[in-house]
Length: 166
Picture (cartoon, rainbow, N blue to C red):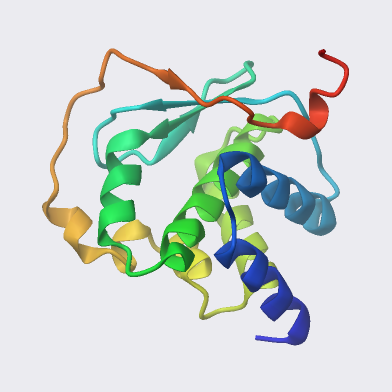
């Protein structure tokens, strides 16, 4: 890990909320790929465990699996591990929100982003290369097969682009 990656890794480690995570994702994606968008909403929903999140094509919505998110919060040994997952998943879905629909392309771009910004050995990079169970093997034993009916809209998400809405 070089000095720039160490600084970026410290930012990931100290993320305070979803909005801060998204802002860091947006700056990293812009720095690496020169792509940007604004006006996203985040909803939390119980989903099958094989799905971390999804972007609704043509919308401004990212839906994140609240079941997996809660499990990782409980399984992680630190805020750094939890934030590493959060950064990686939001980066993946943010790339989808930019109009990239091919899953393999987005997976590769997420890995390339994490590797460039955080280095080979960072949790985000390892999860982007394989999947979250590479860091949290207990996830393989957790089986949730249904989508929940309820959604929780995350308030104060993507606030940098909301200055004109007062």
